Length: 248
Image (cartoon, rainbow, N blue to C red; front, top):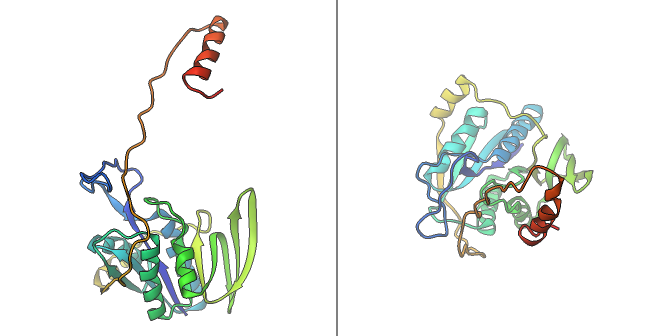
């Protein structure tokens, strides 16, 4: 079986983010980039599926040369092949999905794993868009996955609970925390990954359907205010909550 995993290269969530001079992007200076955390669950589930049914796992990423670092980590975890669909320009979700779908079709992958969303843009739609372009079945926000021959049984999170979905291959699965525990790359895997070649291809040309007009940091939190320490301050507290904080 041919299995594909689509990964994003994103800023570490612990990094301090500053805006770029254009006001539409982040300043990458001093920012550590990592494999998108949700994509680690996708990589792990792809590897587990390969170990169960056989086949090969190909990791695909769209972006600049820096994305090779995330591909290399997936190779160190145990993936067989890595492909960089190279594009130095910022793409929106639909443009990314078109490039991924084109390569997945080229690879003839029957099963495709994504993280449920990337932690930088948080759109949570690339997996579904890719499935639609490919005309594959799709199950999102998956926390339990089982494959028996051509049949998939997946449990997914919904508001207020979970639901069990049955579908068939070919399929796109977007993964959620709780699906598995991603493995650490072993020293042997890290050394093997260094010897593996990451194939580079130009990403399929696709126009963005959205434009980032501006980016800004959240407003700083207002300092706390102490108005007293006994019951006599309750009327003043109520007034401030109503007139200043506007929460009541």
